[in-house]
Image 1 (cartoon, rainbow, N blue to C red):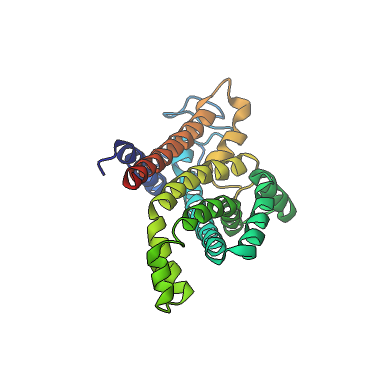
Image 2 (image 1 turned 45 degrees about the horizontal axis):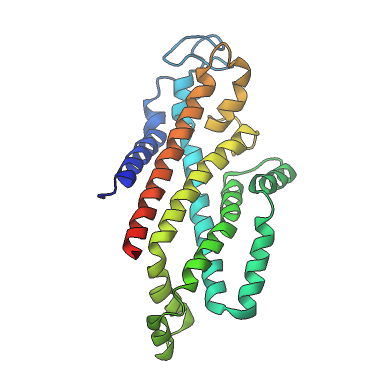
Length: 264
C-alpha cells in the first residue's frame, strides 16, 4: 500500500468498477430511452444516433465489459498457470511438447482467432466471449508461469518435499505456487488491462453478447458517423475505456515494482 502507482491505479480501478456496477441505478434515463433528437445537445453529453442519452448509455455499458473481462482474465490466468507449471515441473520431452504447442498458438494474432470463431458462430453469448478472452491469454501466461516455475522447482524446499514422499499435486500447490504470487499478480493486472480493450474491440467490430444493450465498444461503432457533430457519443466511451486500462496497468506496475524490490 506504500507503492504510489498501486494506490493510484487501485483507486482509479475501484472507482470505475463502482461506476460500472452502480451506474445503471443512477442513470438519468433508461438504457434505450429516447432523450431527444439524434446527435443533439440534449443532456450533459448529448444524445446518440438513436436519440438516447449518451451519459446514461455510458453508465449502462460498463457492467457487461467488466464481467466478461474479469472472468476471461481469471480463466486465462488459471489455464496459463496450469500449463506453465506442469511444463516446468514435468521437464524433459513433456516440457518441449507443451511449450512448442504453446508457441504455435502464440503465432496467431489473438483478435484474428477470435474473429474466426465469432464469425462462425455468428451470435456469440457472454460465455463464449469469456472463453475466447481466457484462451487468448492462456499461452502468454503459460510462458511467464513456466519461466518463474523453472527457478522454483529445483530449489531445496521442493526437493525436500519430494524426498518426503509428498504427492506432486501437493508439492505444486503448497510449495511452487505460493512462491509465484508476485509476478503472477502483476501479469494478472496486465491481462485484465488487455481484456478490457479486447472486449471493447470486439464490441466495436459488432460482436457483443447482447447487440441491443449498451456497450462501450459498440457505442463507438454506432456513433462514429456523428463524430463531427456530436463527438461525445464516441469520445465518452473511448475516454472511460482508456482510464480503466490506465488504472489496471498502474496496479500491475506497482505490483511488479514491489516484486522486484522483494527479489533484490
